[in-house]
Length: 211
Image 1 (cartoon, rainbow, N blue to C red):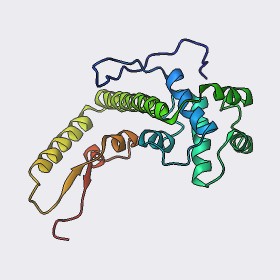
Image 2 (cartoon, rainbow, N blue to C red):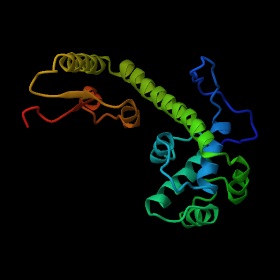
Image 3 (cartoon, rainbow, N blue to C red):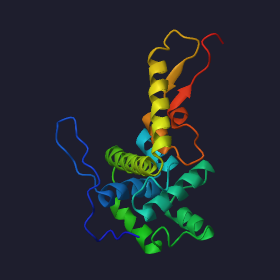
């Protein structure tokens, strides 16, 4: 479990429209997101970045305590339960996750990280970028391991992906309509040995144009 007292590790450096770079520090960027949801759960629709983080919780948060809190908030909101510090603590206690969320004192201290939703949305985008980078790194690491352990299988996968992409490029007026999946959807996928052909996971086959 990570301590928020320690110096935050720089995970990635997203570029702003002005060309400046802003280091992503999980401790500094993740806390305001959870604090806003915990202490000022918005009545209006959530920004898309926050929706994705909640949907992918707890893995979407680098700090496991905040990921556990995000999980609680998501589950409670899906049940249309009141989301506030008291009810979230009760949910954590009921499911035996209070310690995973850092304890009652840690939750109480998050009130000092509450910011406006506009600012939180910017922080959430940095957190989402950090999560996507971690997922991408994991997928690439898994791919490298497969390439070393099973080079023949890797070559077969690569050939199928190239073939599928070639078909996609030439299929604009064909009998099938193919489209590449959204990057966020690809990064959220779980790849394992049961996947016969990786290319089929990367490409989504649409309905026939004749239907």
